Length: 84
Image 1 (tube, rainbow, N blue to C red):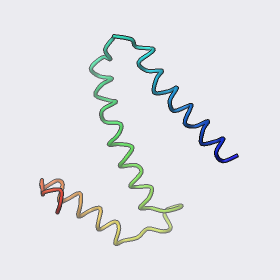
Image 2 (image 1 turned 90 degrees about the vertical axis):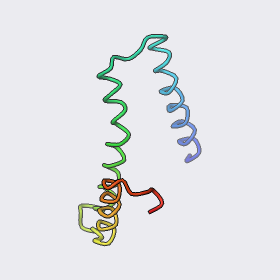
Image 3 (image 1 turned 45 degrees about the horizontal axis):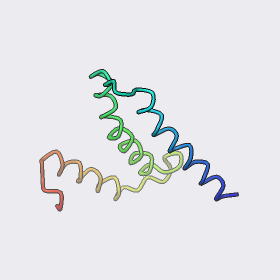
């Protein structure tokens, strides 16, 4: 049953990925739509990090992880090398 679910999700994912180019054809998206789409990956990643740091019901907050993410954000803001 699990593999059937995995195959169904895989097929749905492929259909959704193929649906965009099929629906648009050779037309281009408007510039505001391109801006929104380009920011979605960063917003989703930030949300995932926040949810994983908070734990279930924000009861499992690990202060060391929060400090690590804060340090990484500060290093990125200061344009430190990625290896740092």
